[in-house]
Amino acid sequence: MMSLGVFCVVAGVSMAAGSLWSPRYRAILEVMGGSLFMGGLGFAGADFVLAS
Image 1: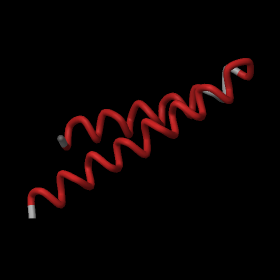
Image 2: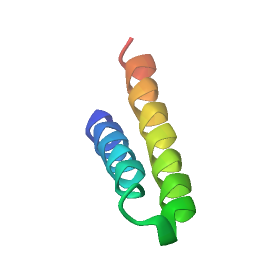
Image 3: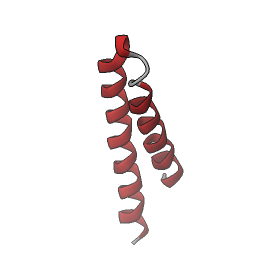
Image 4: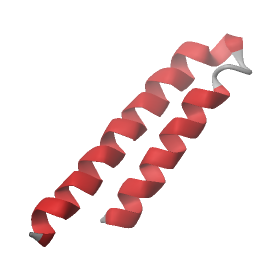
């Protein structure tokens, strides 16, 4: 689950950063990137809770 969390965090940050170069799709990319980022934090946090 940790690898999925890290993947989602990296993908979310990449999409949010990519929105700077695409003003036409900026809102969509920021929302999708933010959702992936928050999901990734949730997956990583759940892994820490389950491991302890």
